Length: 118
Figure 1 (cartoon, rainbow, N blue to C red):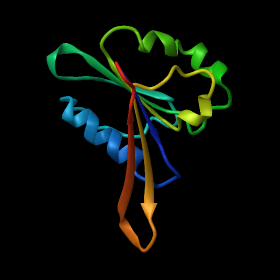
Figure 2: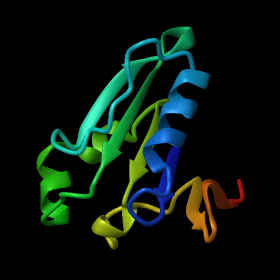
Figure 3: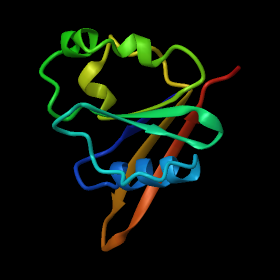
Figure 4: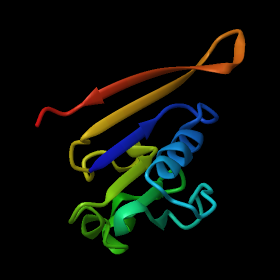
């Protein structure tokens, strides 16, 4: 399952990714994988989840080089922050989340959720 997380810097993408991973049963500390591009986590039931942060991505060729498509095989959950950095390379998301800050309230966020039909 591919889940994309979009929004401006500081909108809460990594916070949401952390909550999703914890909800899936990841017990490791969840940090932003900005410098590694990807962090993988074991989750409940013996599966895996992969968290990508494409903020520093120079080109979609970098994703090809690390075998991104292989992460989509199987039953793993794949979370991708900054999906627009790989436009044209990523397949359509199963779930697309867009976060936005709320003017006048530093702690509030607006959330738009799109789910692909099955």
